Image 1 (cartoon, rainbow, N blue to C red):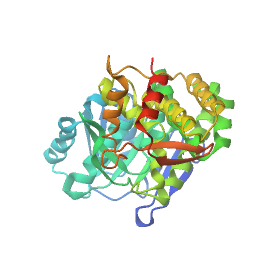
Image 2 (image 1 turned 90 degrees about the vertical axis):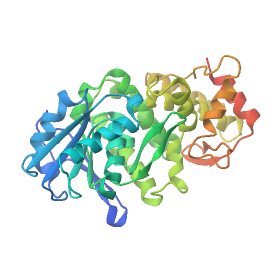
Image 3 (image 1 turned 30 degrees about the vertical axis):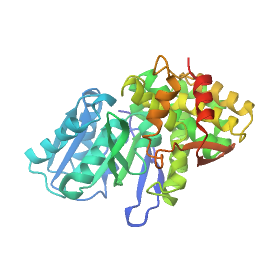
Image 4 (image 1 turned 60 degrees about the horizontal axis):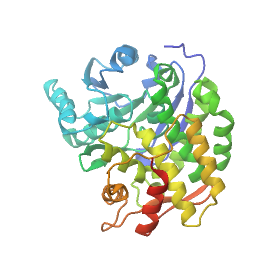
Length: 370
């Protein structure tokens, strides 16, 4: 791990007595100061996976040792296909086997799957124990670790079983992005790009100007991308913690994307790959609903492609591809009484949620799939 040569950038999530900080910087993980001020406890439990553990478990343990008398580690299998009940139970098995009490602090060391599952376990164990997010992927740093949405998947739908449960702190150590596979880096860029069309077109301009630097893992570019993404998400979550209204805009591209993930089988496409393609489809829908012009759709498609992401959807069904997509989308969390709801771009930099006629949705799917 790099030495911590400067103070981390701090982005605050303002949720009253559930407020917390996002720390962004290099060399954070192994430093005891990073964890100062967290809830006091006898024991800490690191939840990670078999890919991340050999890379960063020792550094996290080093940072935690001055604060906790006991540090236990749970190593989960890696991948979206393991975001399920049996894997979740491995966390509960360890907590019970070690006699963990309700002051025990859980540390989620990994990507979005580890973060979601650790948060759900923390929300559930003894009806709630504290946890800290230590995201090691770009996607988790800019999106899934922030805001308190925790869940596991069901074969019929993504993130359908879970809880809103806020972490005590989020620690974004940019050094971890150096070991990220290129495919995972691109997947994270999908969630970075998302923030531009829904909230900040100046940020979209910046991403377009800096996409090559981001792809090359330039630390300054990554630091700004993570910071601005977290600022936008903090602003949204601060107004709508439980997704009753505004927060739904953060799901731009996700309705189509979740259908791709569920239809292909979780883990076939990475979440960010599905979201990237889903944003193209959602922009196409926005155009067909006469909310944006075709130049906007082309601009977004080009940027997503430059980020190394797919821009054409897969076929989920040989004879009724659109019907298969729509069946999955009717199970989306935003659906109401079986009616599909979509995040669309009302105008560049502002998003909203609306329904759409089935024939228009079919036309989008037909136009956007391989």
